[in-house]
Amino acid sequence: MLEKILFTITGPWGTGAATVVDGVAHELMLRGYKVKVVFPDSGLPSPDKDKYYGNPDLYHIIKFPVKYQGVRFHTFPLMIPDPNPRNIKDAWTFKDMTKKQLSVYIAFLKHRLKKVIDEFQPDVIETEHIWLMGYALYDMGYPYIVGAHNSDQMGFHFDSRMRPYAIACAQNTEYIFSISDVVKKKCLKLYNVPSEKVVVIPNGYDERIFHPCRISKKRIFEKYGVEADLSLPVVTFGGKMSRTKGVDILLQANALLQKRFPYLLFLFGSGDIKNVLGKTPAEEEIRNAYFMGHVTPDILAEFHNIADFSVLPSRQEGFGVAALEAMGCELPMVVTCTTQMETYIIGKIVPSENASQLAGAMESLLILPHKEKKKLQGEAYKNALKFSWKENVAKRLTYYKTVMNA
Image (cartoon, rainbow, N blue to C red):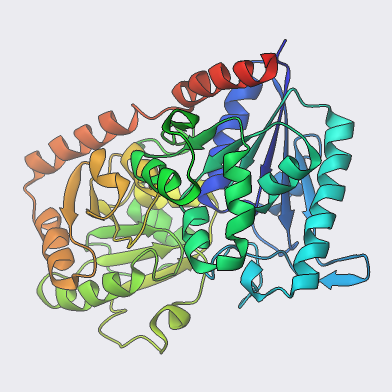
């Protein structure tokens, strides 16, 4: 009988994969299952730190810095050099590790994973990312399911040394849970696995947090110390400050659009915009723009509920949970056509790398008549509701039971 599910994640909270695990874990626990989540973390301060460090029954945190077999790891390594909300500035990637460091890190992961598995005795293990934790489980002889999230496929291209580990992880898993059809195609191409092994299970979002509610714009601005013109419309962006998310293109579009139609742009996510641009942004690029940093989901939901729409001009996007979260607050979206988001979003779809078209799409939503705007809001919310964690977990459980019985 299926009772216990163990999740492992390459990185900590604040990432798409961790958002998925949190949503799935919560739904599993509501159904009476016991869950344990393992991930590394650097112990940095954050407003949501107590949620994880204060719940050891659910979260097993591998704390960094750590020393193992005489090798010191100052922080956990990243798959790609995008900013991570729980890591230091300019954190290293797996590509930066020496051969010895990588070898010891694998041994360290095996040591910590074995300890958790021995104590928790899971019926099923799901590891997020086709990467090193999955390889460690394979090398130790544990059956597992692996989740593919697109960042791991980006890592495959970025770091050739890690490819044999990723391929071994993918080829020896029981199933691959892909967050989208786009990611499934990448898995089939990169890892040479049979199609029936890759199961598409779309992401969900937390309806308990991201839902429509009436909030005073004035009260929100006062609460978070925002000094801005209350008469101007609000646009949100939820994601990392990185080229992957297209923040540089968004700021170019902002410079164009502010000249024609002033509005307030609130950007949420970790990272330094100077690192994205390679310079200090120009005054016109950040006009009426507010960089809010990494915030808790409830704060993001508050700003979504005073916004007219949200924008996510990603160069690559496996699924786009951030878009679902915004739509759950009745926000239409402006997204790029290089992503899976175009299959479910309500709003505008534009080519990537095109600031002019992005600005045009944003303007079309800003000037939309009230009646049409309300219609789009209703459609966005209705579409978001199709992506619940209940549906996600129901499908997962079918494969969990198959693996356990095998």
